[in-house]
Length: 265
Image (cartoon, rainbow, N blue to C red; front, side, top):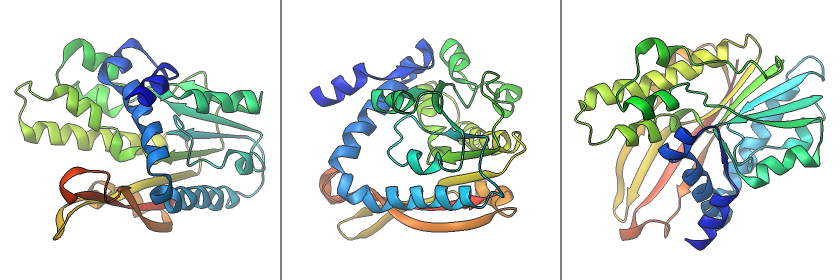
């Protein structure tokens, strides 16, 4: 707990509302989990880095700016290697750790971090504590202060977008089906947001969650139906397993794994 607290002190969030929803707390917890699960996560982190570099190398020429969504921790981003392909890299997230913000100091005028709620609904959600209007959910704001990129990447964040908003709406009496539809809408809106940049996109996301017990598979969550309309127009670069909560991390012999895939559009 003390380690997480010190990480929390170093986190910067996009707004007071973002802190209330728990984004700073989750970012600090992710830092601690990364250290604790470093060995189990190693293959996933390397596969993510390789997929990003593979996607960047598909561009016809180097230069311009890259926009990376989900850079709040940056453990899985090959920044030094990507700078060989781009003049600038802009990291976009609703919260940033001290370590990620330090990247801008290591590469001044080349690496930038930009605090931004990519869903566009967090502040509204805190003020109203109900499912936001459809027009707000489906039209998240593109940050105006970010230079127009020639390449965009969304890294390991798509399926995470609904989690804290849905936690915030728990125990409000809202119908489960309505909450599930809201979560799907947030993910679909993010895919539309990626397309709105009108530039090549690399999407790295989990496509399946699996929960295991001592006696085998307990439950599965399949994200492919949500992704179907988007990924049918992409090239899949790679797919790999990620033991996100390896054996020993959770009580009662339970452990979690994900199947992650990288797509280029």
